[in-house]
Amino acid sequence: MLGRRDRHPSVQAKMQRRIDVLAFENCQLLDVAGPLQVFATANDLARQAGRATPYAPVVVGQGGPVASSSGLVLGAEALPDPGAPLDTLVIAGGWGVARACEDRQLVAWIRGRAATARRVASVCSGAFLLATAGLLDGRRAVTHWQHCAELARQFPKVRVEDDPIFVRDGDVWTSAGVTAGIDLALALVEADLGRAQALAVARQLVVFLKRPGGQSQFSTAMTLQDNGGRFDELNAWILENLDRRLSLAALAARAGMSVRSFTRHYRRVTGRTPARAIEEMRLESARRRLEQGGHVGHVAARCGFGAEETMRRAFVRRHGISPQAYRERFQAAPPG
Image 1: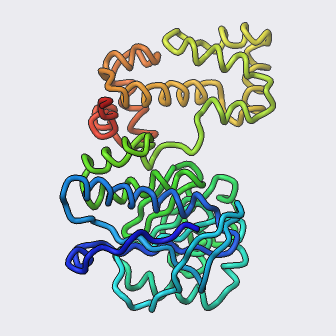
Image 2: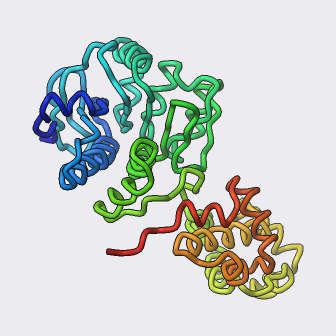
């Protein structure tokens, strides 16, 4: 069973941030284990450096072991008193979330525990528990892409965003599905300990520090491929030729269609105009190159924007941040 690590000395406990990770029957294993491992690794690195460990993560549940949807049983402590000291409350998601939302005692505990916590977070469909407790009313939030429409339907007071990896609205954080909980936890570590420490944790876990919060749950290419496959070959060609002048006439000719017919069918199949799809592909390619340390001007040319200012306007419109600022914030650390 997964459970708590050995307790640290009481002198360290006073310096630690208590984190409750709520698990329930039929929860998603990675929703619990992903964030838990991020905090545990932050502790490991601190211990190796001779520093006090910053976190005291605890899996909590309604008494006794909790079976995850994968079949692995999690060791969970009993739900603590709602008023007991707490830094962060993390709510997992999973197939059992609907039944958990019907448990009035559990929802009341979440509401009370959140009132004590410095901040609250959910992973995947754990957002439904936060919403049931009234903690997302009037706030921006995200959940697994498959459940965004349902979250918005059930909780009209929640401002659901179906695209980001995670969303922070004040002291409430929500993330997209499953592995996005790792991105969320890394962002929490960065907020607590700084970017250098979060990078060290990410490198230890062999993950990227940043799929930034504003980044899509999907790659553009993957999203386009989900829509029937009619233009898969064309989209693959576009991705390989983003630095070209991709006129509507040229794309229509490559698809063997008239411009009018191509525009109509492409939008029906992909849900985007050709121009929008190309811009999204260019932005996604630009993000990757900037994260790898590419010069802004070079990236603009390689991705087909031409001028830096053209890319800057598209970047700010889509991500709310300039390419240079994005590069400075999200450039990957060198290997080693």
